[in-house]
Image (cartoon, rainbow, N blue to C red; front, side, top):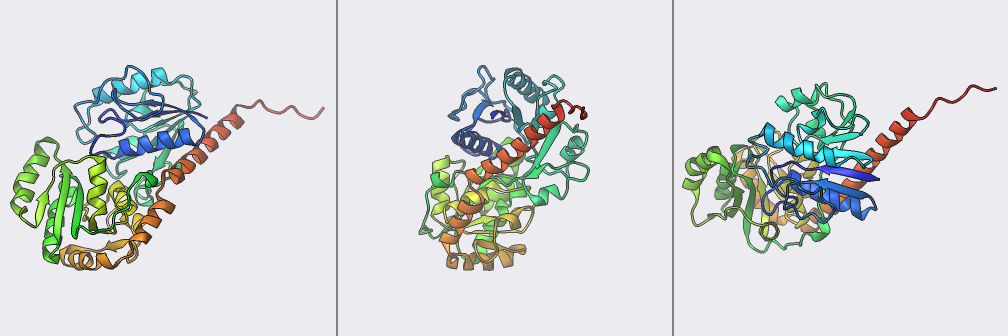
Length: 353
């Protein structure tokens, strides 16, 4: 197949540091090419994903998915669809793209919702026409998609083979994410402190709200046993995760997936966190981590986490959250859409003579 991929306009593909959707798009693009398909990727200028890229795309926008800029995304989308005229199908990872009026009417479009359907995003997707196939990234996310037809639930995958396996010998717990109350960085500190475990934290601080939250709620709790590393590279991220006895993920909202959890499992590190959102679809409680409620229960779980089998964590990532599995799931959906389209376009058979 000839597949067009449209990444969001906010970060390079792959992202040089913190990123979510861009990591997924990068893995999908590489995996599709490895599976024998032709890929043309529309991503911000300067992206280094080793597949054919749409030329003359603008650089990453100053906005972000959290501070959505309609103008930046629409311009990005318009350039992308203008270039993706010779493909069999487009998989669009932007918000505005599926609603773009000037995309070719005959072009099959798949889109993935990377945010919750319970927000205004869900109201928007309920207005989407039947010519767009919607992919949900977890069953928990899909459960909130009332009125939005879901074509397929496809969990994210990563290139597990490229992730080094750690031995947890650092003796610390790790936290990595955005500096947002939703991600639970303050809770991570309280959990680690109560468990008597050193905590190393990495987070991106973007915008005045996140900076204010860090200054008022997180920075006062830092000390010899809680170290803030700032934003780190992908290689540093895997080193941080692999050296940890556990990865703390005390999310405070129903997160649709949680890419950092499968990244931690790929390094062999068990996950200790809340059972919010899609966490129960990723973490096998008592096997690859512990899902608990409240600081006390999570601190107790953190103390138990070093006793879990790290090879089981790595095996779960290999079997359930690999790029190969993610690509196969998408290819199956693409083929189903194109097969249905060909059947709908085939001329009616003549009646018997």
